[in-house]
Length: 450
Ligand code: ADP
Ligand code: MG
Image (cartoon, rainbow, N blue to C red):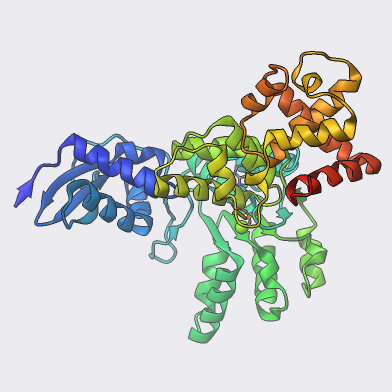
């Protein structure tokens, strides 16, 4: 039986995927077209080969589940290329898997994540030099900085930057022969080439590229034969001004048992570090990721994620997924309470038990002020500090939104609460006497000893 799929059902399917599988959903899903539903199989047409690859790799289960939920029937899903099928589909630029110029007739696929482009990367004080040097190298490969060495802890955007260079170079000069791979793959290729006796082919492959991009070169550590091979690959490319870009989780001399001659070569060009992002950058990264997934989050939830997760950018995405997942599962709107729960430690977290009244009771007591002072509009210094402490505690320990907290403490707006929060956090960092006083209140509040 052949059934045409109505627009409404198709919209349901997409909606289901966006809601239940937000981590996999992409903005360009709106470009997908549903074909017919034949004998329990739904054809879904991608706008290009890159979308198709992505869909086949990540989206079968989400779409099958969505199709079954939307039609109430057992349905399987097949992804097809709309271009090849001659179907009218808008061309998409977002997701690109690149075809690499052939090596000895074989066509290798350059596997790049379509999301890892410069447009989706947020520059900030933590990655300024790395970002600028990656841009410079993509604009003039082989001349700006060679080699370019990006290092930093895990989850801080090294792979994203390396792939962004590849995308940009290929956008400008599609015929560029780029070899992008993880160092682990390089090592495995090398071992395989040795075992199969095809070292010449291996060498040809790696030494006839315009740009060699190797991620996580700390993987060379202790692998003497691969280091030797890599040394020659490096020299060959370097001497003909081919761009080499490397990343690692530490600086070249810090890579354990890396030959001295490689350390010195890695130092020839530019070494740039990526650090953990500051609050503003984290905030901007969350916004970018939301945009990419067409998600919408209230401002206080964004701030909560940005303030809770501060050392690893990848975990910001994990947090977005958890929050979205919980909202979908429990059919709840995304608000601060839900975000607190999703971000963990419900059982051990004292957050849900603290009420604003508990805070004001303690603060009036410890600071010797009256409740009406805290909730009034007076601005005198003696009141300002305890009021800011209240706002800080309410922000940290309750689920109330910034607006609610501001409103409660004298009809102030959310920026006042943010300001108070920052002020008290800073003072806590720098003034140990103040910190112990505050911590004593926090403990009293959360451990119930009020
Ligand atoms: P690394 O290779 O350093 O371990 P990745 O490049 O894999 O880190 O980055 C982890 C995740 O964080 C990716 O989803 C990446 O897009 C994201 N990310 C890291 N830094 C940024 C940034 N400055 N702007 C946008 N996304 C970022
Ligand atoms: Mg990486």
